[in-house]
Amino acid sequence: MCQNNCSIASFLPKVSYTFDASAKTVAVQDGSTYGSGDGLKKVHIKVHDQFGNEKRDTITTTGSGGAKTIDVSTLNLSKPLNITATVITNKDFHADGSAFHIQAAGDLAGWDKK
Image (cartoon, rainbow, N blue to C red; front, side, top):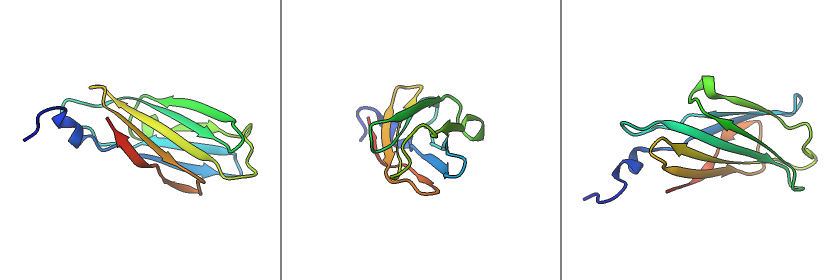
C-alpha cells in the first residue's frame, strides 16, 4: 500500500538529445510522462566538456515545442561531451539523469527520482 509520494511512480522522466558535430549544437527535448494532475515545471540542462567548460539552458514546455538547441561551439570538442539534466514537475518531484560521451543521438539514463 502506498503511503507517501504515490504519484511519483507515474512520473517517468525521459530526456533525449541529438548532437550535430558539424553545426556544433546539441538539441535537447523533454519526453517525460507525468502523473494525473502533474506536468512539467522545467528541465535544467547542462552540456559540458571534459575540461570544465559548460553550457546551460532550461526547457519549460514539453514535447517538440520545448526542444532547446544549445550552441556548444565554445566547448572543447576534442573529447566527447556529457549532458546532465534535472526534470522538475509541478508537484516538485525531481529526477536527475545523464548521458556521457554522447554520440549522434540518444536518451539520458540513470534517473534518480525524488
